[in-house]
Length: 306
Image (cartoon, rainbow, N blue to C red; front, side, top):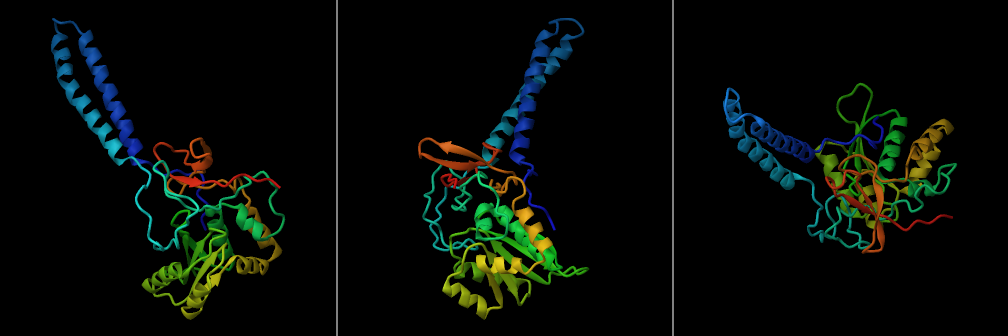
């Protein structure tokens, strides 16, 4: 079972291109300075002439890579998102409108207290509200691992949830698959379950589990019952956790509240995000610490401390 990837950033190709471009430009300037410093005559004249000949090519290569960096660096997704039920993500939320300076709009129900209140001492619905999306995925993965499965998680981002592949010991083929999706406060409709059923069919799996901190619509519950999908909403997840041993419950709760459990993770870079106020819109956003190379943002709720 893998721990939540909070600090391991992925290499950014655009940053690598930028580093090489700066190096070539610096080299070109250095060669030009050296060539101008050599004597106009004598044995070093040929060396200076050769260096001056190479300078334009080095500078040209540096400028070309600089242009390439501008082209390939990550940009916010400003395209239209008007599909009523995008694949895997469920219905579009109308709580936040797209803006050109924002990344993809994801979970609008991120923890509002910013860790300013004490963690819950026992498992309850508040735990799911306190933790960020990636921590919820890690808790679900650990919950299935406690049942004796070996797990492998494929996360799809803050609103796409995660597929947790479950393996019996010493078996290479997955015995089952679970899909977990945090997003508390937003009911899961039929479309995400249809997408999940297609995933099960593609891997010839007849049963699967869909877990969410939220609830399911009546149509979604009926679809799950008719297609071999176990629908675990927040209360049923809590009931499942309550069936674990006290030691296992404590381990899950410790994982949920480990470190900055409330600070969201950037799905692109795998690092914790920072809160930045937007003076124009009078609200705050969670922004990736890799900005401006990663422009992914999440909306942040107003802080409230009991």
